[in-house]
Image (cartoon, rainbow, N blue to C red; front, side, top):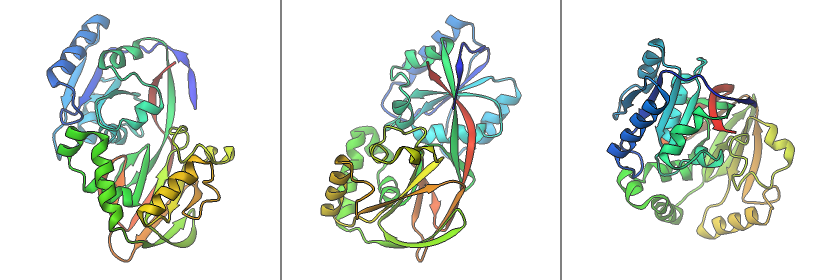
Length: 304
């Protein structure tokens, strides 16, 4: 849902900056932020994130001190951390693309250049209400998964991501596919129990990632659900190549390698052996896991 275009009345922004994300020079990014704050008369603050700290608590302390908007500077994991802090508040968030993937920013056409991204919210903007997944005491707005992609994220180091970008995921993915084994998943979806043997349970946000390739060929009414789950049954490299072909040819609903299920309220996932769980590109624990859908969880500022 979008609210009408309007200029925001910003006075005290907070820039939550992850210096470990992406490849941009730290001093350059911080100079740009100081320059923009001076240009618009903002009393801006900066918080550089550190591994293991409680971003939720820190951001809420800034809000209590009068912060009126949060710039999330980093990748999708940084954005997820800021979202977790903002759920239940009325404070909006803006994204500064600094990470490797930046899926949310890319799909919503948020400027990639740092200075442009810092400036656009002082112009004509819209506010988009994002649905979220509540999983293991945090919130995710893009996706969550158990299986192939969660293992891929777990086994791709930050050093590899910084050095090789998205190619690091491709290389690790090929290595994992070679030895992949299907899992038996016990699922409770909106109160109904199912079992599935699959390599992946992947949950995504269709109202945000409308251009995601998995979603392009689904019936239009599927995109009205807050989240969509894909049960991926592909096991070998040949299976995955066949799945890619099914997607490209618009045969998602007919593909024997994947099943689509709409998620309205919740899903519980359990397995015989613990399997890695990821949300918005960050490893957050292992199965069993209960995931709750939270509608209109946070406000995101996007360009008009």
